Each structure stands twice: as C-alpha cells, then as structure tokens.
Length: 419
Picture 1 (cartoon, rainbow, N blue to C red):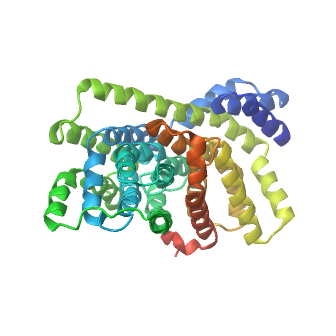
Picture 2: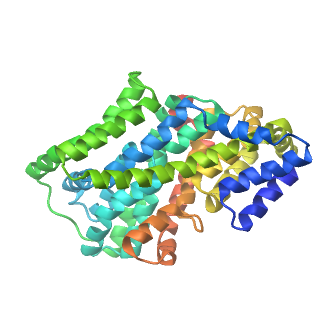
Picture 3: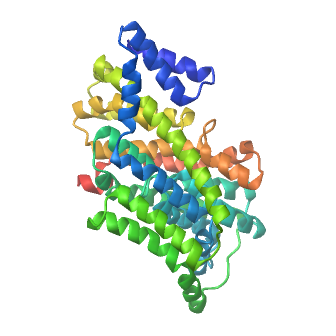
C-alpha cells in the first residue's frame, strides 16, 4: 500500500493538483484498493480538524497580519535603528533584529518578511545598499518567523505528535537566535565587502523617543509569551489575546486602521487559515491510512535496515526535510511527514521535542529555496525585483541557515529543554 499511497500523491502534485486534494486522493486510492468504506474519509477529515489547540492557528495568523499592516512594524524598526544604526551596515543588522522581534508577534514567515520588507527595503535601497542582497537578507530573516515562538508550524507539529505546544515554544528561542546571529554575521561581511554606509550617530534622546513610540509593539510578545509560560493562559487563549491586543493598539494607540481595513485584513487572514485547515482536514484520512497499514513502521524498518548508526540516519532525515522544504509549503510538509518520521525517531530514542524543533527549522529554510519559496515571492512582490535575481543573492544566507540547521540536528543541547 505504501508505494500506491506515495506514487499517487507525487503524481497528483506533478499534475498540479493542490496539496490538500493530492493528499485525500492518494488516501482514497489506498482505501478503494483496501476495500474500506469511504464514509471513513469524511469522519477522519472532521476529527483531524476538531482540536482545541488548532484554534491558535487562525488567531496567530490574524494577529500577525494586523501588526504587519499597521504602524507597529515601522516604529519597531525606528527603535532598532536608533540603537544600532551607527554601525557600518547597521541597517542590515536592524533588518534581522526586526525580523526576530516580529517573529515573536506573528508566528509566520511570510508575515515577518512582508512587515520588515515593506518598511526597510525602500530605506536600504535609498541608503545605497545593494538591492538584491538587501531583499535576500530580509527574505532569509523571515524564516525566523516560524522558529521563534509563537509559531504556527510548531502548533501543527504539537497536535500531530501529541506534544506540548508550551514545551516546543520554550525550545524555539535558541535556534531562532542562532539563525539571526549567522545572518547578522554574513550581513556584516557583506557590509564590509561593499562598503555600506553608517547611519546616524548614537543619540540617547532619539533612542528614548523611538522607544516610547515602540513600547506598545514591544509589549505584545511579552504579554503573549509571558502569559503562556507563566500559565495564565494556554497558547490557544494567547492567540485570542494577541488579536484583541493588536486591534486595541491599531485603533486606540496608533489610530492607523479603519473598520474597512480591518475587514480586508480579516478576509486575507481567513483565506490563509482556510488553506491550512483544509490541508489539516485532508491529512486525517492520510494519517489513518498510514496507521492502518503500518507504513511509518515499514519506513522506519527500511531506514534502520540501511544503517543503525544514529548520525547517518539523522543525516538522511535531515536531507529529506531540506528537500521537502524545496518542493512543499511549510504546513503541508509538517502535516504529511511528521507521522511518517515519528516511529523512526522513537525507535532511535530521539526526543520528540528535539525532532520537532529540528523539523521546523529545516522546513523553514524551504521558504527561501525555489520553486516553493514563499518569502522570496513576498519580497519580490514588495519590490518588483525578479525572483531569479533574489535567488542568486540569497545563497550565502541559505548556506548559513543550513549550517545552523545541522548544528541543531547534531548538537541536541542547543534545544535547552533537552539539557
């Protein structure tokens, strides 16, 4: 049954069938051959979406869109620049730090890229930074959006693997910081190489002025993550709080939003959430097929038949994750591959938290690897620069992120909850 399932799925993708429908069609093909009543498809589709934890997905997406399209992203960038702008290539550092901070608000790579890119890319170009390299840096920094919590892919992984969302969130900080650090290091080398300019001199008065304007944006991740980790509310409740806070700040503090704009943002967030939820629903029959015919166990046995060396097996899994990120959207890859890999990871004694963080980081890199490179498409849409130009410039940052990924794969202590 495994060849039928995966060959049908890949054939549907090759024909251009959307991922969600490819998943359910391949599942139906196996069920028909196995003489199983198709009523089970509808039942499993409903059951897979019937989870309280999944409430966090649409609300975090909505909160991120609200903050990305308002004044918050702009004032956060102004504050970061007032602190670091005097360094040569300082605006590159600001780009990465702004992305890391916005990651703690949005939980989305595309939203992070859009928020930081719309604010900083025109300014980078204006100050003489190489356009394609600046755009590539912002797109690469956007990958941190799904690693530093709150993270929509981590929520999806937690639901499928039956792990704690809280625990995954707590372990996302160090990997996200490492990703930011390597991007900043590469950006500083680029700044020296191309002799990028320094910004305005450090001015304490200006720092305080920008800080007071940005304080409402700074408070958002503190409220969200502080509430989750202190136990005041669950991640799903935190997502609701984030939406309420974002609306309050937009309407009553910065006063940069109308009800018409709110409605448009709501429609866009609903479309994004619907796509993810449809994939989750369609993964229900797929997961049942995997479990019923013990396909993950067969995959695990086949891999362990190749080698029992944990380093070689982790290398194989890591390469598969990177390749999946090239051709599949983040949520789709996590929903499809998680149930396949879990038995193998358990057989090797790998922590499910370690694997979850490794999976999210690896699949996030796919956001800057064509053909399915959502961050590059977002950055290209903002600037109008062809994606081919950005793809060439993103290579140094891509290699840096791959180095961090393999560090996380082979150095579990970088996931602090495992120490």
